[in-house]
Amino acid sequence: MIEVEQLTKRYGSVKAIDSVSFRVEKGEILGFLGPNGAGKTTTMRILTCFLPATEGTARVAGFDVFNQPMEVKRRIGYLPENPPLYNEMTVDSYLDFVARIKGVDSGDRKKRIGEVKEKVSIQEYSNTLIKNLSKGYKQRVGLAQALVHDPEVLILDEPTVGLDPNQIIEVRELIKSLSGNHTIILSTHILPEVSMTCQRVVIIAQGKIAAVDTPENLTRQLQGSDRIYLEATGPEQSIAGKIKEIDGVLRVESHKLDGSDAFSYNVETELKKDVRGRLARKIVESGFDLLEMRTMSMSLEEVFLQLTTKEEGVRSK
Amino acid sequence: MKNVLAILQKELRTFFVSPIAYVVLTVFLIISGYFFYNIVSIFVERSMMAMMQSQQFGGPPPAMDVPALVTRNFFGVISTVILFMLPMITMAAFADEKRRGTMELLMTSPITNVQIVLGKFLAALSFFVVMLLPTMLYYGFVFAYSSPKMTLGPVLSGYLGLLLLGGALISLGIFISTLTENQIVAASITFGAFLILWVIDLSARGGGTVVQEIVSYLSILNHFEDFSKGVIDTASLVVYSSFIFLGLFLTYRSIESLRWRQ
Image (tube, rainbow over all chains, first blue to last red):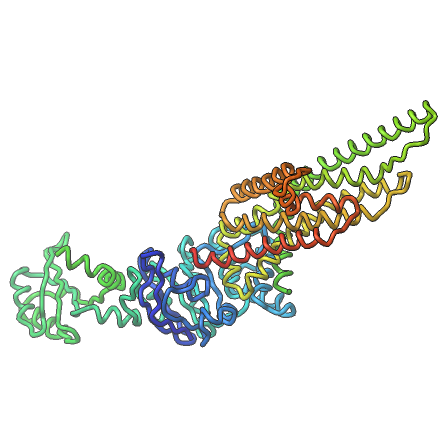
Protein backbone atom coordinates (compact mmCIF):
# COMPACT_ATOMS: atom_id res chain seq x y z
CA MET A 1 0.00 0.00 0.00
CA ILE A 2 2.83 2.35 0.88
CA GLU A 3 6.23 1.97 -0.69
CA VAL A 4 9.06 4.22 0.37
CA GLU A 5 12.38 3.92 -1.39
CA GLN A 6 15.63 5.64 -0.55
CA LEU A 7 13.88 8.72 0.71
CA THR A 8 16.19 11.57 1.68
CA LYS A 9 15.27 15.04 2.86
CA ARG A 10 17.88 17.73 3.32
CA TYR A 11 17.39 21.02 5.13
CA GLY A 12 20.38 22.95 3.92
CA SER A 13 23.28 20.68 4.74
CA VAL A 14 21.42 18.79 7.45
CA LYS A 15 19.86 15.49 6.49
CA ALA A 16 16.55 15.16 8.30
CA ILE A 17 16.08 11.70 6.86
CA ASP A 18 18.64 9.67 5.04
CA SER A 19 17.82 6.89 2.53
CA VAL A 20 14.76 5.69 4.32
CA SER A 21 13.04 2.68 2.75
CA PHE A 22 10.12 0.65 4.02
CA ARG A 23 6.84 -0.86 2.91
CA VAL A 24 3.46 -1.05 4.54
CA GLU A 25 0.99 -3.70 3.46
CA LYS A 26 -2.73 -3.12 3.16
CA GLY A 27 -4.56 -3.18 6.46
CA GLU A 28 -1.41 -3.08 8.51
CA ILE A 29 -0.56 -0.78 11.42
CA LEU A 30 3.01 0.38 11.21
CA GLY A 31 4.61 2.07 14.17
CA PHE A 32 7.16 4.77 13.61
CA LEU A 33 9.34 4.83 16.64
CA GLY A 34 12.14 7.22 17.37
CA PRO A 35 13.35 9.92 19.67
CA ASN A 36 12.30 13.51 19.06
CA GLY A 37 13.91 14.97 15.99
CA ALA A 38 14.61 11.58 14.45
CA GLY A 39 12.74 12.39 11.23
CA LYS A 40 9.34 10.87 11.94
CA THR A 41 7.36 14.00 11.16
CA THR A 42 9.46 14.76 8.08
CA THR A 43 8.77 11.30 6.65
CA MET A 44 5.07 11.68 7.31
CA ARG A 45 4.97 15.11 5.75
CA ILE A 46 6.58 13.75 2.62
CA LEU A 47 4.05 10.92 2.46
CA THR A 48 1.18 13.40 2.76
CA CYS A 49 2.63 15.56 -0.04
CA PHE A 50 3.17 18.46 2.34
CA LEU A 51 6.92 18.44 1.83
CA PRO A 52 8.84 17.41 -1.25
CA ALA A 53 11.65 14.90 -0.76
CA THR A 54 15.17 15.79 -1.82
CA GLU A 55 15.80 12.33 -3.21
CA GLY A 56 14.02 9.04 -3.48
CA THR A 57 10.45 8.07 -4.18
CA ALA A 58 7.37 7.32 -2.16
CA ARG A 59 4.19 5.75 -3.47
CA VAL A 60 0.85 5.58 -1.75
CA ALA A 61 -1.69 3.14 -3.20
CA GLY A 62 0.44 3.06 -6.34
CA PHE A 63 0.54 6.83 -6.83
CA ASP A 64 3.74 8.81 -6.60
CA VAL A 65 3.59 11.52 -3.95
CA PHE A 66 5.49 13.96 -6.10
CA ASN A 67 3.95 13.39 -9.53
CA GLN A 68 0.38 12.54 -8.59
CA PRO A 69 -0.21 14.46 -5.35
CA MET A 70 -3.95 14.89 -5.92
CA GLU A 71 -4.52 11.15 -6.16
CA VAL A 72 -2.42 10.59 -3.05
CA LYS A 73 -4.10 13.34 -1.04
CA ARG A 74 -7.50 11.90 -1.87
CA ARG A 75 -6.50 8.60 -0.30
CA ILE A 76 -4.79 9.86 2.81
CA GLY A 77 -6.17 10.99 6.12
CA TYR A 78 -3.60 12.92 8.06
CA LEU A 79 -3.51 13.98 11.67
CA PRO A 80 -0.51 16.28 12.25
CA GLU A 81 1.07 16.57 15.65
CA ASN A 82 -1.07 19.59 16.48
CA PRO A 83 -4.56 18.87 15.21
CA PRO A 84 -5.36 21.45 12.50
CA LEU A 85 -8.50 22.95 14.00
CA TYR A 86 -10.37 26.22 13.57
CA ASN A 87 -11.18 27.21 17.13
CA GLU A 88 -14.08 29.47 16.31
CA MET A 89 -15.97 26.82 14.34
CA THR A 90 -18.31 24.24 15.83
CA VAL A 91 -17.39 20.58 15.53
CA ASP A 92 -20.09 20.03 12.91
CA SER A 93 -19.25 22.99 10.73
CA TYR A 94 -15.55 22.14 10.94
CA LEU A 95 -16.10 18.53 9.89
CA ASP A 96 -18.40 19.72 7.12
CA PHE A 97 -15.68 22.02 5.81
CA VAL A 98 -13.05 19.29 5.91
CA ALA A 99 -15.41 16.83 4.22
CA ARG A 100 -15.97 19.35 1.44
CA ILE A 101 -12.32 20.03 0.73
CA LYS A 102 -11.59 16.30 0.95
CA GLY A 103 -14.10 15.78 -1.82
CA VAL A 104 -16.91 13.97 0.01
CA ASP A 105 -20.08 14.21 -2.09
CA SER A 106 -22.68 16.57 -0.68
CA GLY A 107 -25.22 13.74 -0.50
CA ASP A 108 -22.97 11.55 1.67
CA ARG A 109 -21.55 14.31 3.81
CA LYS A 110 -24.09 14.31 6.62
CA LYS A 111 -23.98 10.56 6.94
CA ARG A 112 -20.19 10.41 6.90
CA ILE A 113 -19.87 13.13 9.53
CA GLY A 114 -22.36 11.28 11.74
CA GLU A 115 -20.37 8.08 11.33
CA VAL A 116 -17.00 9.54 12.22
CA LYS A 117 -18.44 11.42 15.16
CA GLU A 118 -19.78 8.16 16.46
CA LYS A 119 -16.47 6.41 15.84
CA VAL A 120 -14.50 8.87 17.94
CA SER A 121 -17.46 9.42 20.32
CA ILE A 122 -17.95 13.13 20.05
CA GLN A 123 -21.64 13.12 19.07
CA GLU A 124 -22.70 15.14 22.08
CA TYR A 125 -20.31 17.95 21.14
CA SER A 126 -21.66 18.51 17.62
CA ASN A 127 -22.54 22.14 18.24
CA THR A 128 -19.74 23.02 20.63
CA LEU A 129 -17.15 25.52 19.54
CA ILE A 130 -13.86 23.73 19.12
CA LYS A 131 -12.06 26.21 21.36
CA ASN A 132 -14.24 25.09 24.28
CA LEU A 133 -13.24 21.43 23.94
CA SER A 134 -10.66 19.80 26.17
CA LYS A 135 -7.35 18.70 24.73
CA GLY A 136 -8.49 15.09 24.50
CA TYR A 137 -11.62 16.00 22.60
CA LYS A 138 -9.70 18.27 20.27
CA GLN A 139 -7.51 15.29 19.48
CA ARG A 140 -10.62 13.27 18.70
CA VAL A 141 -11.94 15.95 16.41
CA GLY A 142 -8.54 15.82 14.73
CA LEU A 143 -8.95 12.08 14.26
CA ALA A 144 -12.49 12.55 12.96
CA GLN A 145 -11.09 15.05 10.47
CA ALA A 146 -8.58 12.48 9.23
CA LEU A 147 -11.28 9.84 8.86
CA VAL A 148 -14.06 11.88 7.34
CA HIS A 149 -13.42 10.93 3.71
CA ASP A 150 -12.88 7.26 4.58
CA PRO A 151 -9.28 7.24 3.35
CA GLU A 152 -7.40 4.05 2.54
CA VAL A 153 -4.35 5.29 4.38
CA LEU A 154 -4.21 6.99 7.75
CA ILE A 155 -1.14 8.86 8.87
CA LEU A 156 -1.16 9.84 12.51
CA ASP A 157 1.61 11.92 14.01
CA GLU A 158 1.81 11.19 17.73
CA PRO A 159 -1.93 10.65 18.12
CA THR A 160 -1.88 10.12 21.88
CA VAL A 161 0.35 12.97 22.90
CA GLY A 162 -1.08 15.14 25.65
CA LEU A 163 -3.99 12.88 26.49
CA ASP A 164 -4.78 11.49 29.91
CA PRO A 165 -4.25 7.75 30.50
CA ASN A 166 -7.89 6.83 29.94
CA GLN A 167 -8.05 8.77 26.72
CA ILE A 168 -4.80 7.21 25.57
CA ILE A 169 -6.28 3.76 25.99
CA GLU A 170 -9.42 4.79 24.12
CA VAL A 171 -7.49 6.30 21.24
CA ARG A 172 -5.30 3.19 20.98
CA GLU A 173 -8.36 0.95 20.92
CA LEU A 174 -9.87 3.17 18.28
CA ILE A 175 -6.75 2.99 16.12
CA LYS A 176 -6.64 -0.77 16.47
CA SER A 177 -10.27 -1.04 15.46
CA LEU A 178 -9.51 0.95 12.32
CA SER A 179 -6.89 -1.43 10.98
CA GLY A 180 -8.05 -3.86 8.37
CA ASN A 181 -10.10 -1.27 6.54
CA HIS A 182 -7.36 1.31 6.72
CA THR A 183 -3.63 1.09 6.39
CA ILE A 184 -2.18 3.05 9.26
CA ILE A 185 1.16 4.64 10.00
CA LEU A 186 1.50 6.15 13.42
CA SER A 187 4.47 7.78 15.00
CA THR A 188 5.27 7.87 18.64
CA HIS A 189 8.11 8.03 21.05
CA ILE A 190 6.19 6.06 23.63
CA LEU A 191 7.35 2.47 23.50
CA PRO A 192 4.48 0.55 25.05
CA GLU A 193 2.21 2.22 22.53
CA VAL A 194 3.99 0.50 19.69
CA SER A 195 3.94 -2.96 21.22
CA MET A 196 0.27 -2.49 22.03
CA THR A 197 -1.03 -1.17 18.74
CA CYS A 198 1.34 -1.95 15.93
CA GLN A 199 1.96 -5.07 13.90
CA ARG A 200 5.28 -3.82 12.68
CA VAL A 201 7.75 -1.25 13.89
CA VAL A 202 10.17 0.99 12.09
CA ILE A 203 12.75 2.32 14.47
CA ILE A 204 14.25 5.50 13.20
CA ALA A 205 17.15 7.36 14.73
CA GLN A 206 19.01 10.37 13.41
CA GLY A 207 17.21 10.16 10.11
CA LYS A 208 18.17 6.56 9.45
CA ILE A 209 16.20 3.40 9.84
CA ALA A 210 17.69 1.35 12.64
CA ALA A 211 15.37 -1.64 12.39
CA VAL A 212 12.12 -2.85 10.84
CA ASP A 213 10.29 -5.83 12.28
CA THR A 214 7.45 -6.99 14.50
CA PRO A 215 7.76 -5.85 18.10
CA GLU A 216 8.23 -9.48 19.23
CA ASN A 217 10.92 -10.29 16.69
CA LEU A 218 12.83 -7.14 17.43
CA THR A 219 12.93 -8.00 21.04
CA ARG A 220 14.04 -11.56 20.34
CA GLN A 221 16.70 -10.70 17.80
CA LEU A 222 18.37 -8.12 19.87
CA GLN A 223 18.52 -10.33 22.79
CA GLY A 224 21.80 -12.18 22.27
CA SER A 225 20.83 -14.51 25.09
CA ASP A 226 17.81 -15.69 27.06
CA ARG A 227 17.51 -14.71 30.63
CA ILE A 228 16.05 -16.49 33.60
CA TYR A 229 15.28 -15.00 36.93
CA LEU A 230 15.20 -17.22 39.98
CA GLU A 231 15.12 -17.03 43.74
CA ALA A 232 16.47 -19.70 46.02
CA THR A 233 17.48 -20.11 49.66
CA GLY A 234 20.93 -21.28 50.60
CA PRO A 235 24.55 -20.11 50.38
CA GLU A 236 24.99 -17.68 47.55
CA GLN A 237 28.38 -18.84 46.30
CA SER A 238 27.61 -22.50 46.21
CA ILE A 239 24.32 -22.08 44.38
CA ALA A 240 25.87 -19.76 41.84
CA GLY A 241 28.61 -22.32 41.32
CA LYS A 242 26.07 -25.09 40.77
CA ILE A 243 24.17 -23.03 38.25
CA LYS A 244 27.32 -22.28 36.32
CA GLU A 245 28.02 -25.99 35.96
CA ILE A 246 24.91 -26.43 33.82
CA ASP A 247 25.57 -26.66 30.09
CA GLY A 248 24.36 -23.55 28.27
CA VAL A 249 24.60 -21.09 31.12
CA LEU A 250 26.70 -18.09 30.26
CA ARG A 251 26.59 -15.88 33.28
CA VAL A 252 25.11 -15.66 36.74
CA GLU A 253 24.52 -12.59 38.82
CA SER A 254 23.25 -12.78 42.33
CA HIS A 255 21.65 -10.32 44.69
CA LYS A 256 20.62 -10.53 48.30
CA LEU A 257 16.87 -10.31 48.72
CA ASP A 258 15.70 -7.83 51.33
CA GLY A 259 14.08 -9.24 54.44
CA SER A 260 14.90 -12.89 53.88
CA ASP A 261 17.90 -15.19 53.72
CA ALA A 262 17.22 -16.02 50.07
CA PHE A 263 19.13 -14.70 47.08
CA SER A 264 17.95 -13.79 43.61
CA TYR A 265 19.90 -14.89 40.53
CA ASN A 266 19.89 -13.53 37.03
CA VAL A 267 20.95 -16.36 34.78
CA GLU A 268 21.96 -15.64 31.22
CA THR A 269 21.79 -18.66 28.92
CA GLU A 270 22.53 -19.45 25.31
CA LEU A 271 19.75 -18.50 22.93
CA LYS A 272 16.94 -21.04 22.51
CA LYS A 273 18.51 -23.48 24.93
CA ASP A 274 15.94 -24.17 27.59
CA VAL A 275 17.80 -24.96 30.79
CA ARG A 276 14.91 -24.39 33.18
CA GLY A 277 14.27 -28.08 33.91
CA ARG A 278 17.90 -28.86 34.66
CA LEU A 279 18.25 -25.66 36.62
CA ALA A 280 15.36 -26.51 38.90
CA ARG A 281 16.46 -30.09 39.39
CA LYS A 282 20.01 -29.08 40.19
CA ILE A 283 19.00 -26.66 42.91
CA VAL A 284 16.48 -28.94 44.51
CA GLU A 285 18.78 -31.96 44.32
CA SER A 286 21.50 -29.96 46.02
CA GLY A 287 19.15 -29.59 48.95
CA PHE A 288 18.14 -25.96 48.52
CA ASP A 289 14.67 -24.48 48.14
CA LEU A 290 13.72 -23.02 44.79
CA LEU A 291 11.30 -20.18 45.52
CA GLU A 292 10.64 -18.68 42.13
CA MET A 293 11.71 -19.06 38.52
CA ARG A 294 10.66 -17.22 35.36
CA THR A 295 12.05 -16.28 31.99
CA MET A 296 12.69 -12.63 31.33
CA SER A 297 12.33 -10.99 27.97
CA MET A 298 13.97 -7.78 26.99
CA SER A 299 11.43 -5.00 26.91
CA LEU A 300 11.00 -2.99 23.76
CA GLU A 301 12.36 -0.12 25.75
CA GLU A 302 15.71 -1.84 26.08
CA VAL A 303 15.68 -2.76 22.40
CA PHE A 304 15.00 0.81 21.52
CA LEU A 305 17.76 2.15 23.69
CA GLN A 306 20.16 -0.39 22.32
CA LEU A 307 19.33 0.51 18.74
CA THR A 308 19.22 4.24 19.00
CA THR A 309 22.22 4.70 21.27
CA LYS A 310 24.39 1.93 19.93
CA GLU A 311 27.37 4.03 18.94
CA GLU A 312 27.49 6.08 22.07
CA GLY A 313 27.25 2.95 24.16
CA VAL A 314 30.32 1.52 22.50
CA ARG A 315 32.26 4.69 22.89
CA SER A 316 31.50 5.12 26.55
CA LYS A 317 32.89 1.70 27.26
CA MET B 1 -15.35 25.62 -8.17
CA LYS B 2 -16.83 23.52 -5.38
CA ASN B 3 -13.57 23.75 -3.48
CA VAL B 4 -13.31 27.50 -3.99
CA LEU B 5 -16.80 27.83 -2.58
CA ALA B 6 -15.92 25.65 0.41
CA ILE B 7 -12.93 27.85 1.25
CA LEU B 8 -14.93 31.02 0.68
CA GLN B 9 -17.74 29.95 2.99
CA LYS B 10 -15.33 28.82 5.68
CA GLU B 11 -13.49 32.13 5.51
CA LEU B 12 -16.67 34.16 5.83
CA ARG B 13 -17.91 31.96 8.64
CA THR B 14 -14.73 32.30 10.67
CA PHE B 15 -14.54 35.99 9.86
CA PHE B 16 -18.03 36.81 11.03
CA VAL B 17 -17.56 35.11 14.37
CA SER B 18 -14.41 37.11 15.06
CA PRO B 19 -14.71 40.53 16.69
CA ILE B 20 -12.49 42.08 14.02
CA ALA B 21 -15.25 41.85 11.43
CA TYR B 22 -17.64 43.86 13.57
CA VAL B 23 -15.01 46.37 14.62
CA VAL B 24 -14.13 47.00 10.98
CA LEU B 25 -17.78 47.27 9.92
CA THR B 26 -18.66 49.62 12.76
CA VAL B 27 -15.65 51.88 12.41
CA PHE B 28 -16.19 52.07 8.66
CA LEU B 29 -19.86 52.94 9.13
CA ILE B 30 -19.08 55.70 11.63
CA ILE B 31 -16.35 57.26 9.52
CA SER B 32 -18.20 57.01 6.21
CA GLY B 33 -21.42 58.28 7.79
CA TYR B 34 -19.63 61.24 9.30
CA PHE B 35 -17.97 62.16 6.02
CA PHE B 36 -21.17 61.71 4.06
CA TYR B 37 -23.04 64.05 6.40
CA ASN B 38 -20.22 66.60 6.18
CA ILE B 39 -19.95 66.48 2.41
CA VAL B 40 -23.67 66.80 1.89
CA SER B 41 -24.02 69.72 4.29
CA ILE B 42 -21.01 71.56 2.84
CA PHE B 43 -22.29 71.38 -0.71
CA VAL B 44 -25.87 72.16 0.25
CA GLU B 45 -24.61 75.20 2.15
CA ARG B 46 -22.49 76.30 -0.78
CA SER B 47 -25.32 76.01 -3.24
CA MET B 48 -27.59 78.00 -0.88
CA MET B 49 -24.97 80.73 -0.64
CA ALA B 50 -24.62 80.81 -4.41
CA MET B 51 -28.39 80.96 -4.76
CA MET B 52 -28.63 83.85 -2.29
CA GLN B 53 -25.85 85.75 -3.98
CA SER B 54 -27.49 85.37 -7.35
CA GLN B 55 -30.78 86.66 -5.91
CA GLN B 56 -29.04 89.62 -4.26
CA PHE B 57 -27.13 90.69 -7.30
CA GLY B 58 -29.73 89.57 -9.81
CA GLY B 59 -27.40 87.27 -11.74
CA PRO B 60 -28.44 83.98 -13.36
CA PRO B 61 -28.98 81.01 -10.96
CA PRO B 62 -25.65 79.16 -10.50
CA ALA B 63 -25.04 75.91 -12.32
CA MET B 64 -24.13 73.70 -9.40
CA ASP B 65 -24.77 69.95 -9.55
CA VAL B 66 -24.78 69.08 -5.86
CA PRO B 67 -25.55 65.33 -6.26
CA ALA B 68 -22.64 64.88 -8.67
CA LEU B 69 -20.29 66.76 -6.36
CA VAL B 70 -21.42 64.69 -3.38
CA THR B 71 -20.96 61.47 -5.34
CA ARG B 72 -17.48 62.36 -6.51
CA ASN B 73 -16.23 63.59 -3.16
CA PHE B 74 -17.77 60.80 -1.13
CA PHE B 75 -16.22 58.14 -3.36
CA GLY B 76 -12.92 59.94 -2.95
CA VAL B 77 -13.24 59.74 0.81
CA ILE B 78 -14.21 56.05 0.79
CA SER B 79 -11.28 55.18 -1.44
CA THR B 80 -8.99 56.70 1.18
CA VAL B 81 -10.73 55.20 4.20
CA ILE B 82 -10.48 51.68 2.81
CA LEU B 83 -6.70 52.01 2.80
CA PHE B 84 -6.96 51.87 6.58
CA MET B 85 -9.65 49.19 6.74
CA LEU B 86 -8.54 46.57 4.24
CA PRO B 87 -5.32 45.53 6.03
CA MET B 88 -7.50 44.34 8.89
CA ILE B 89 -9.53 42.20 6.50
CA THR B 90 -6.61 40.60 4.73
CA MET B 91 -4.15 40.18 7.60
CA ALA B 92 -5.51 36.84 8.78
CA ALA B 93 -5.89 35.28 5.34
CA PHE B 94 -2.78 33.11 5.42
CA ALA B 95 -0.90 34.31 8.50
CA ASP B 96 -3.51 32.77 10.76
CA GLU B 97 -3.62 29.47 8.88
CA LYS B 98 0.13 29.24 9.22
CA ARG B 99 0.09 30.04 12.92
CA ARG B 100 -2.57 27.47 13.76
CA GLY B 101 -1.10 24.77 11.58
CA THR B 102 -4.26 24.52 9.49
CA MET B 103 -2.16 25.32 6.43
CA GLU B 104 -1.06 21.70 6.74
CA LEU B 105 -4.70 20.62 6.49
CA LEU B 106 -5.32 22.72 3.40
CA MET B 107 -2.14 21.62 1.68
CA THR B 108 -2.68 17.92 2.34
CA SER B 109 -6.26 18.06 1.04
CA PRO B 110 -7.08 17.31 -2.58
CA ILE B 111 -7.51 20.97 -3.52
CA THR B 112 -5.15 23.04 -5.61
CA ASN B 113 -3.33 26.12 -4.40
CA VAL B 114 -5.16 28.16 -7.04
CA GLN B 115 -8.44 27.15 -5.45
CA ILE B 116 -7.18 28.12 -2.01
CA VAL B 117 -5.99 31.53 -3.22
CA LEU B 118 -9.19 32.23 -5.15
CA GLY B 119 -11.36 31.20 -2.21
CA LYS B 120 -9.49 33.51 0.13
CA PHE B 121 -9.56 36.40 -2.33
CA LEU B 122 -13.27 36.09 -3.06
CA ALA B 123 -14.03 35.83 0.66
CA ALA B 124 -12.19 39.06 1.43
CA LEU B 125 -13.85 40.73 -1.54
CA SER B 126 -17.29 39.57 -0.37
CA PHE B 127 -16.63 41.01 3.05
CA PHE B 128 -15.60 44.25 1.40
CA VAL B 129 -18.92 44.31 -0.48
CA VAL B 130 -20.80 43.76 2.78
CA MET B 131 -18.84 46.66 4.22
CA LEU B 132 -19.90 48.91 1.33
CA LEU B 133 -23.58 47.94 1.36
CA PRO B 134 -24.70 50.53 3.94
CA THR B 135 -23.18 53.33 1.88
CA MET B 136 -25.69 52.53 -0.86
CA LEU B 137 -28.31 53.66 1.59
CA TYR B 138 -26.68 57.08 1.72
CA TYR B 139 -26.92 57.39 -2.04
CA GLY B 140 -30.50 56.22 -1.76
CA PHE B 141 -31.28 59.30 0.35
CA VAL B 142 -29.60 61.61 -2.12
CA PHE B 143 -31.42 59.92 -4.97
CA ALA B 144 -34.80 60.31 -3.23
CA TYR B 145 -34.53 63.90 -2.10
CA SER B 146 -32.11 65.73 -4.37
CA SER B 147 -32.87 68.34 -6.98
CA PRO B 148 -31.64 68.27 -9.71
CA LYS B 149 -32.20 64.50 -9.72
CA MET B 150 -29.05 62.49 -9.13
CA THR B 151 -27.82 60.54 -12.16
CA LEU B 152 -27.19 56.89 -11.38
CA GLY B 153 -24.30 56.46 -13.80
CA PRO B 154 -21.48 57.87 -11.68
CA VAL B 155 -22.74 55.99 -8.61
CA LEU B 156 -22.67 52.66 -10.42
CA SER B 157 -19.31 53.29 -12.04
CA GLY B 158 -18.02 54.51 -8.69
CA TYR B 159 -18.96 51.24 -7.04
CA LEU B 160 -17.39 49.31 -9.89
CA GLY B 161 -14.24 51.36 -9.34
CA LEU B 162 -14.34 50.66 -5.61
CA LEU B 163 -14.63 46.92 -6.30
CA LEU B 164 -11.64 47.02 -8.60
CA LEU B 165 -9.56 49.20 -6.29
CA GLY B 166 -10.57 47.06 -3.31
CA GLY B 167 -9.75 43.89 -5.23
CA ALA B 168 -6.31 45.22 -6.11
CA LEU B 169 -5.56 46.22 -2.52
CA ILE B 170 -6.92 42.92 -1.18
CA SER B 171 -4.77 40.87 -3.53
CA LEU B 172 -1.72 42.76 -2.30
CA GLY B 173 -2.80 42.35 1.34
CA ILE B 174 -3.35 38.62 0.94
CA PHE B 175 0.06 38.24 -0.61
CA ILE B 176 1.67 40.01 2.33
CA SER B 177 -0.28 37.74 4.66
CA THR B 178 1.48 34.70 3.20
CA LEU B 179 4.86 36.07 4.24
CA THR B 180 4.41 35.87 8.00
CA GLU B 181 2.73 33.89 10.75
CA ASN B 182 1.87 36.99 12.69
CA GLN B 183 -1.34 38.84 11.83
CA ILE B 184 -0.17 42.11 13.36
CA VAL B 185 2.99 42.03 11.28
CA ALA B 186 0.94 41.26 8.19
CA ALA B 187 -1.45 44.13 8.91
CA SER B 188 1.40 46.58 9.57
CA ILE B 189 3.28 45.72 6.39
CA THR B 190 0.07 45.85 4.36
CA PHE B 191 -0.84 49.21 5.82
CA GLY B 192 2.68 50.47 5.11
CA ALA B 193 2.45 49.25 1.52
CA PHE B 194 -0.92 51.00 1.04
CA LEU B 195 0.50 54.22 2.48
CA ILE B 196 3.42 54.05 0.07
CA LEU B 197 0.97 53.62 -2.81
CA TRP B 198 -0.89 56.64 -1.51
CA VAL B 199 2.20 58.83 -1.08
CA ILE B 200 3.46 57.90 -4.53
CA ASP B 201 0.08 58.80 -5.96
CA LEU B 202 -0.01 62.18 -4.19
CA SER B 203 3.54 63.11 -5.16
CA ALA B 204 2.94 62.28 -8.81
CA ARG B 205 -0.39 64.06 -9.08
CA GLY B 206 -0.48 67.03 -11.37
CA GLY B 207 3.25 66.86 -12.01
CA GLY B 208 4.56 67.50 -15.46
CA THR B 209 7.71 65.42 -15.62
CA VAL B 210 7.77 62.17 -17.55
CA VAL B 211 8.43 60.13 -14.41
CA GLN B 212 5.49 61.69 -12.62
CA GLU B 213 3.25 61.00 -15.56
CA ILE B 214 4.26 57.37 -15.74
CA VAL B 215 3.81 56.94 -12.01
CA SER B 216 0.40 58.55 -11.97
CA TYR B 217 -0.59 56.42 -14.94
CA LEU B 218 0.31 53.26 -13.03
CA SER B 219 -1.05 54.44 -9.70
CA ILE B 220 -4.14 52.42 -8.85
CA LEU B 221 -5.47 55.25 -6.70
CA ASN B 222 -5.28 57.74 -9.53
CA HIS B 223 -7.36 55.57 -11.84
CA PHE B 224 -10.15 55.52 -9.33
CA GLU B 225 -10.96 59.18 -9.94
CA ASP B 226 -12.34 58.51 -13.40
CA PHE B 227 -14.76 55.97 -12.03
CA SER B 228 -16.13 58.42 -9.47
CA LYS B 229 -16.82 60.88 -12.27
CA GLY B 230 -18.76 58.26 -14.20
CA VAL B 231 -16.00 57.47 -16.70
CA ILE B 232 -15.11 53.84 -17.28
CA ASP B 233 -11.79 53.83 -19.07
CA THR B 234 -10.52 50.61 -20.61
CA ALA B 235 -7.00 51.56 -19.58
CA SER B 236 -8.14 51.70 -15.94
CA LEU B 237 -9.82 48.32 -16.24
CA VAL B 238 -6.60 46.87 -17.62
CA VAL B 239 -4.48 48.45 -14.87
CA TYR B 240 -6.75 47.10 -12.13
CA SER B 241 -7.10 43.61 -13.53
CA SER B 242 -3.36 43.39 -14.07
CA PHE B 243 -2.74 44.50 -10.50
CA ILE B 244 -5.21 41.94 -9.12
CA PHE B 245 -3.74 39.21 -11.29
CA LEU B 246 -0.23 40.10 -10.18
CA GLY B 247 -1.21 40.08 -6.50
CA LEU B 248 -2.95 36.72 -6.78
CA PHE B 249 -0.09 35.26 -8.78
CA LEU B 250 2.43 36.33 -6.14
CA THR B 251 0.19 34.84 -3.46
CA TYR B 252 0.01 31.59 -5.37
CA ARG B 253 3.78 31.44 -5.84
CA SER B 254 4.34 32.31 -2.23
CA ILE B 255 2.22 29.46 -0.83
CA GLU B 256 3.65 27.13 -3.44
CA SER B 257 7.12 27.96 -2.16
CA LEU B 258 6.03 27.29 1.44
CA ARG B 259 6.53 23.62 0.75
CA TRP B 260 10.11 24.17 -0.28
CA ARG B 261 10.97 26.64 2.42
CA GLN B 262 9.80 24.51 5.33
